[in-house]
Length: 262
Image (cartoon, rainbow, N blue to C red):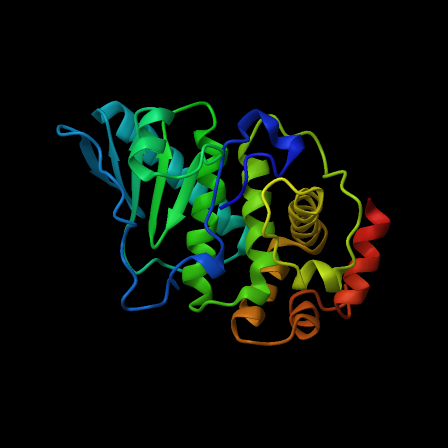
């Protein structure tokens, strides 16, 4: 789960949380549960199906609003990745608790958590941080299902894209992360374990910044091709060349260009 304190510059909605690839069941697995079995909403909750989500909330208006927000954010992810041909195999369940207290009580998640993606389901609570938290968590679901396998070596890309979408969904974000640079080789191999360590903050800030740079400087079509190459099991250097021909020859060139842009 992404810690609430991991990105100081996103403090306005810093209660979000997520499940990393190495902590979740692979989205491609036939035995993957549709949800985590957390406590459901109280009797009388409203259910609404949309194109990509099955929303459960307290009241038709809240369900409709959450559904509209989810679909808008979903389209944004598709635009940023160029994965228009991707379609989930079934609707993503979205459980919207009525309050943070209910969310924590029924999920048993840590105090710093404000949202989770487990299996194919999203667990959130109705509050001011819903939109960016939902953007972050749904990106994990889409990335995992698109990839079709567990691959801890791509956690930097998974989290980087989720952080980018979270930033885009927030009206509070004001510019790039100001973390100390981590060499790309370390960034790609690092798997943060602690929730409040300064290195964890730096890592999350950097992977989001790198993905932003790839999308904004390399182009969304190129980023989509990069993702497809990574899905096919090609090396990061090969994926960079495939996605950004004439741009960056390899990850080292990308690192140099990203560092110069800071």
